[in-house]
View (cartoon, protein in one colour):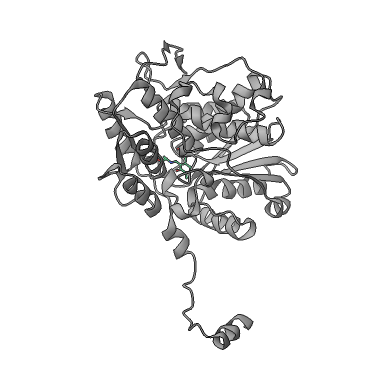
Length: 397
Ligand code: F0G
């Protein structure tokens, strides 16, 4: 069953519906299977390990073996900050971001519904992932991208997997409005995170974290927030396992936004549940350059219900956290992902994160998604002849 999170109106799982027809609010899929967690134990480490919690037809699954991503203990950074730190490396998914979890189930749902065209608006990763999964399923894919604002790696992926890529004169929010209008006309099946089935895949990040910790909840989960689907999804995941009795606590959900694109942080700081959209969002972390997140209501509920937090970070803090994580722990992430680490450092500094807390930072996309940022942050390699004497002279310096 699909249910409106505001008025409770119910819809069947077979309906193509994105927002409530009565009140206009966002929807969620209700999923509470009666199973024991023992059934998961001998299964392959992909998100489909938890297939009983994935409300789609098991015979139609379209998968590239997404999920089961590294859960890396970061003792060097953790001990400097005085916390127990784990990093969940979502860049290790098939197309290099967490979006693959949502697209695997989203395209599975599309196959179930028998649609022939799927589409999305995207700051890059959603389109890269949708293009790959649509290719695997053999269906047509249309993506709208904000012109000139998509990182090169993501653009290359969307084009190379054969999507029809349209560059929109406008930002992500405008592109999303446009693709939503096309979807409501019935021209395509929308696979942005307003589609509640997307979040059913992404909630598996929450499943994996507590499974990896031996069926325990961490104290806190910190992640970057853009369109606000992922924080909502992870909260839904840990809440489903909590309600199933698999874990005894739930983490404080902590969302980080860039200073130039922070409608959710603004609402949180005023104690509100509704956001005021930001007209011209701007940040170096183009993945989260979003002014009117569609899942803001779900995200703010997750933050308030979990006694969590929301904070901003500057572009400088993002870029220096990106470099720190790469050079201290060997984990290469794109700028938006580093917002979680930058946010963690700021919150430790402010005393919001307590000493000794067990914290999981989600790093959402791979370093090579945005190669220009990485290259521009480094000095050009020295050009040298392949001469052993010259080389050893340089290396000894
Ligand atoms: N990190 C990365 C790398 C992203 O690509 C996104 C969103 C987020 C964080 C934020 O997640 O939207 O669920 O709050 N990227 C979308 C896209 C908007 O089109 O690829 P969110």
